[in-house]
Length: 292
Image (cartoon, rainbow, N blue to C red; front, side, top):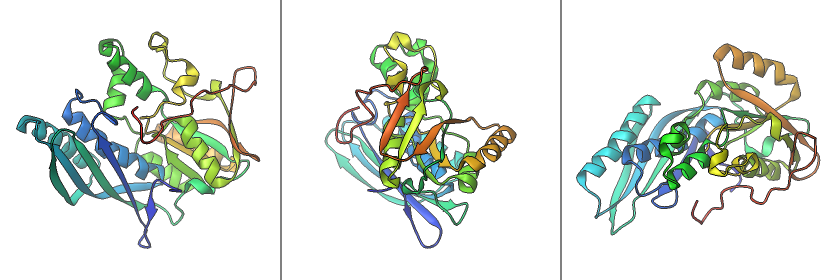
């Protein structure tokens, strides 16, 4: 698959994501947050393509060992975020399972421009930008696993209910971006996907990346935060000539957008330390088909 979304002739984009219990969320996670997460992992794809969410289809595989109260919590979280992002639920399907909860959402979004930035549109010389703060997802999961939720409440919140960039970012991306994706598999992995699709390389500086702070007690080194998934921030490239306009738009709309490197000839992603030396990464991101 070359991109996170499909583009229809009507100017609509279509994206879909599935969450599986024990893989994409923990069995003990509050089910209202699972419903919210399902909406947001799809909305992040939409924003990253310079589009606004519009309509959705919801599919549910409900385990027979879950209670009616659990179902009510899930639907409450789902419906609250559908309303928050002004998304109409237009259909779907439900069935049962003996044990595991599985849910998926297919989201249609309206593109804000004739140009939808795909993974394969990055150009040599493009700046590389990210929104928000990177690393909350992996830090939140580790805090939960180590019973340290009270010490890292913001990261735990980000893991369970992704805190997405403002939908105003969709306007910025629609106007300026060449290539884009959301950060679902990890910053390095998703940047590598853009490089592969665009047949270019990239160099980013660790010191320029807006990483979550004060999580060293979770054994989360700076480089580890680059390979964690569940970020759902936006990653995009844009011509260097647009840098001033992007920074001005971000200031005016109070958007957290940071330039972290550039695209170049070659292949793959190079990460440089504060001294400009390459950092060797043991892991680049989420591996599909396995547990997180």
